[in-house]
Length: 291
Image 1 (cartoon, rainbow, N blue to C red):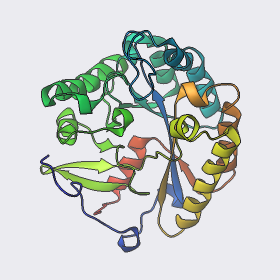
Image 2 (cartoon, rainbow, N blue to C red):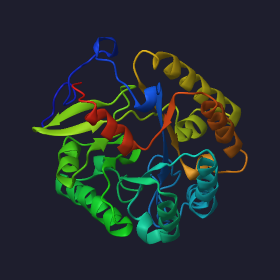
Image 3 (spheres, helix red, strand yellow):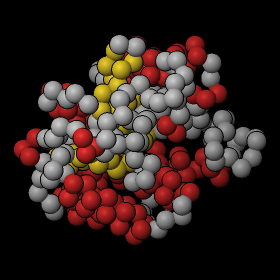
Image 4 (cartoon, helix red, strand yellow):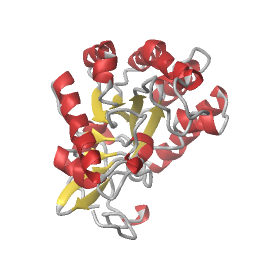
């Protein structure tokens, strides 16, 4: 994609769109996105490392806790609420933590690509290297799971001007990098179709806990308030709500109950569709969406 002043999609104000409907008249399509990632001990952790040398054990340790403990606590919580996650997966997880892949497959969750490792970001790559990363991520996840991912989330939501082109080449159907809407919308990538699905940097444990210093109780209230507004608006036209999670953050013992309580609150409402990213996009496209 050539540099341009707006995205490769139309500006479509939400109050001027056709009514969006979800299955069985649901007001809100809820998708929960666990980010399951790899941070090699011999590489610096972008944006967090306090030193220019490895090993940076103080940053690496909590992240490894997420892979050793937190992710399984998160699996148990979501399963108890009848929620299948849409995993934003670093493809290096397939080699580093194959047991996690085994358990997710047993749960029937969906996988979407999330770079190879969160220690490497697109803004530091040349175009050909980025292409290799995108295609390699899709290929490795397909080999490990038997299904080629349909969705994509860039590490730290960072793109280059080439990213969307490479995603189309890889066979992606949807991308979650754009946090600019409460409904999916169509993108035109050189004549090929890609769909943006609503993701969130607000209802997201990493920025809220590590950057904003929120407490677990504050995060729970944020989830509830986000849901309340989207649920009210969804009576007129369907909305999408993303809850974006990292096992090393939400999966620690003193935070997981906040997620549990928030999900219990949401599930206490009728007309909520518990969906995966692919299910949301399939229904959106099958409805004949034009925006």
